[in-house]
Length: 391
Ligand SMILES: Cc1ncc(COP(=O)(O)O)c(C=O)c1O
Image (cartoon, rainbow, N blue to C red; front, side, top):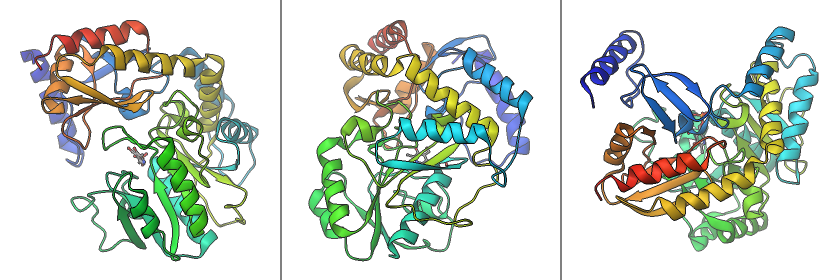
């Protein structure tokens, strides 16, 4: 790291540490500006953003249509709550339901991934009147009381005296263990079809189909947490469509509104059965978020981004298994590069070469979550940088 970079990083650290709780470890860069998939740092370096602000910058930065939608909606109506109907909210819900897998017919808007999961679980408990949830080793579902209770290795940060319901954690990709766990008290099985935080661990169509069968037979709901892997990241609208398996409930957030805070729960008619007052959120479904949800989906569909994601994902697999990279897991633009040395070292070395990437729960993974507008030239730059890094 150059001396100026260290100084600037330290200065920003110092400024933040004076006023904020010290709960985040920082990557040593200070982004000042973003354009397309490029981020410019305070010391004027141009980085290719293969991390997308933790999967949120799904269309990169300064997308002209996103900026126009933001300005137009802000001018028209900045906020109204769910106590009034809004045309923009109805349009966003219709667009999202049509973008989602067939069979999920209603949307509920919230503000974040954890909140989406929290509400999905509430719907499952109400629907089944049961008290247990089955989740997976390696899972990350968020940090609130319910979502956090289902998150793997939460002991370090959970903080609540006890989980709010019974939880069974099962090993990954073990159909027999899932079958055994699905007792008559189980309300839901929750799964990220591709585990993000774990390092892009892909469950595949066969396991997901088995989970669909087993939950149905047990009278439990199947919840797909697509907070990280949804919104086109697999090269399909959601992993549900990529693998041909429709859950009873699907949650999404992160890239949903292109960087504006938003989350959503998609629910089948069968699982819904809700009435006035059963769920709620002040900011959920606000006009700004809804205008952006509508626009993001429109850009993904009209820009033909999904076939490009699939093609460029294949190109990454083909060309980036060089230098310290020994394999690739995941799907689409949620990829884990398996590394011969700790992923943290490789991320730091990539940063020196102008590429922003991320680590994962697995210490030997470098995680890639680039914007869907990535181009061939960016993949070539990543392959070149990796080839120059010692194995
Ligand atoms: C799969 C998954 N679920 C839920 C969450 C929580 O989302 P949020 O941080 O928006 O609450 C995350 C965040 O990383 C996630 O990756």
